[in-house]
Image 1 (spheres, helix red, strand yellow):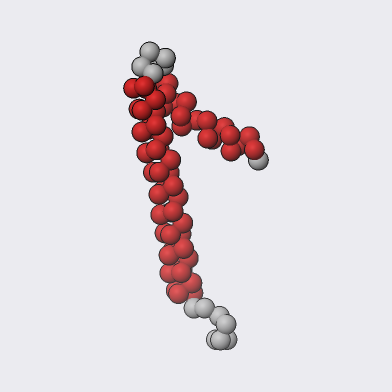
Image 2 (cartoon, one colour):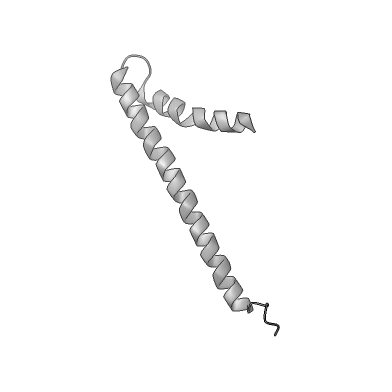
Amino acid sequence: MARNQIPCALRLVATAAVDRVSTTIWSAAAGLYLGTGLILAFLVHTHYPGELGMREWIRLVLSWPLIFFLRSK
């Protein structure tokens, strides 16, 4: 085996570790997005109670960043 070749088992472990870190990062990002969105929707709903229902505020708060970022690409 050449010096620069990584054994197959070690390569699989390294790939699994990278996938686990990537999944953790994406899970944390999704949690922050949903958590802050729900808190913001609740605060806006309590400040303007007659404007929209809680469900509509959640939908509005969680959808505008997605629309903004998808539109800019």
